[in-house]
Amino acid sequence: MGRHKKEIVIDNILDRRKSGYYSTPKIVADFISYEMLKLNPFGKNVLDPCVGKEELLDTFYNNNKVIYSFDIIDFGNHKKSIFRNEDFIEYYNNLKTPLLFSNNQDKINYDYIIANPPYNCHEVDYIKNNKKYLLEIFSEIGVSNLYSMFLYAIIDIAKEGTLIGIITLDSFLTSYAHKTLREKILTTCSIHHLILCPTDLFLDQNADVRTCIIILQKGKKYQKEILTMNRSDNKKDFYQKLINKEFIEVDINDFVLTNERDNREIIIDVPKDIINLFHFDRLGELFSCLTGISTGDDKKYISKEKNDTFIFPFYKNPGTRRFYTEPDGFLHKDFIKLGEKISNFIVRNKNFLFKEGITCSSMGVSFGACYLPPNSTFGVNANIICDNEDIWWLLAYLNSRLVTYFVRGILIRSNMITSGYVSRIPLLPFNEDVKNKLSQISKFAYNNKIKNDKLLESISEIDLIIFNWLNLSDNIIKHINDFCSNLIKRT
Ligand SMILES: C[S@@+](CC[C@H](N)C(=O)[O-])C[C@H]1O[C@@H](n2cnc3c(N)ncnc32)[C@H](O)[C@@H]1O
View 1 (cartoon, protein in one colour):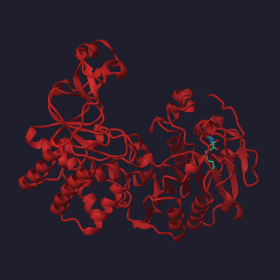
View 2 (cartoon, rainbow, N blue to C red; view 1 turned 120 degrees about the vertical axis):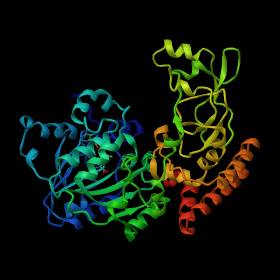
View 3 (tube, rainbow, N blue to C red; view 1 turned 60 degrees about the horizontal axis):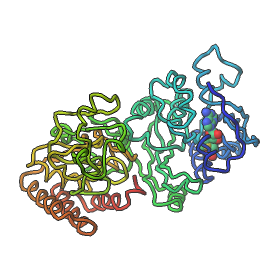
View 4 (cartoon, rainbow, N blue to C red; view 1 turned 90 degrees about the vertical axis):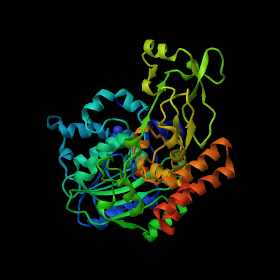
């Protein structure tokens, strides 16, 4: 396994990206360690597997705990811990291979493991250079992120009763790629805290990341009510709430989507009446929800202008557009033949080519849908092919705030919305009267290509119909509206 160049000075963005070094704010470090000590004041040994400059260790140090630490970079100051300038993943692998035991530290039972794992993601050199080796170690969860490998390894080496306090990226809460990691957490640990951190928590270190604090205990018998907190608007509000302990207490049974059609997504601060809607049929069970063409080289095969060679309207991501959108470009007239000849030019779902339906946004924080006219083609975003009589009410429904909340507040908090997520949107069994009213609004919106204030007005009309039909309380409506008006801060 490749050794890492050790750089002591972390003073620019490139170095941070290479090592994944971001320093945890003191209030957060103190909160996590204090809560861990409150849960078990009597433990002895602490581990920080990616210690940086010992930012997480003050409370343990002041309480005379014996602290062990690792880092691939030696920052030079190890007053509080017994430090090893080693790769923690390598240490974990050695632990799993008893013949490689090197010294007594490998046999220590840690009572507390605290960490802010490196935020490198899969394109970063570490994973690329060591992929085969890492895939062998982490065959159960995959190697899409370094932080998820750390989390898995930490849970694995913890003994019964070990407290685990982590601040890390929160994509593991909902992303399909992290389903097995969620299973690992839910089946082997009790969960004490799950707190979503504000998006500006690491912004002063040039990291615009969504993070959370999770405090676990290895073993299932310690489970009590989980203390949760939704994402605050900003650091200041967040610190205030942490200090005042403004938590929502949640039963473990209301903490995950348990329906067999779902993937045990972890849900924070979602009203019960909304979770119950996940018992209805899902969109993909009644309509074809699919992806289309990936050309492998859009610049070559998709033109902005229509001409003799590029003739088929191509839709790939309506983004923030709703109801009406121009095509994103025009696809090469020989695309079927190109798909047969070129290995990475893939034409999926050929039976559904040129049919009318709905095209949904894929990348970006907002979720919206536009009419997909007949004789067009579409990309790898989610597209719904259905009869004309269903298109218009469904289009209105998909553009409602309730659906935005389903998608971005529950099903997937990260930025990429694939057809797998869209097909799991609950489909409410509206009667004909409601469908007619919704259809009228979306036909008007489409025909008039409405934007800005007019668009917001139409969406509010749609919301009113849906909220009334569901008979939702004012508090829940306020909760959904607040989420949708502050999408970037809340997701
Ligand atoms: C997000 S920083 C956390 C630093 C500090 N513990 C804190 O909370 O402020 C992650 C640390 O992980 C270290 N790191 C990166 N890859 C590592 C690895 N494979 N093994 C051990 N440490 C690693 C980085 O050098 C960096 O210091």
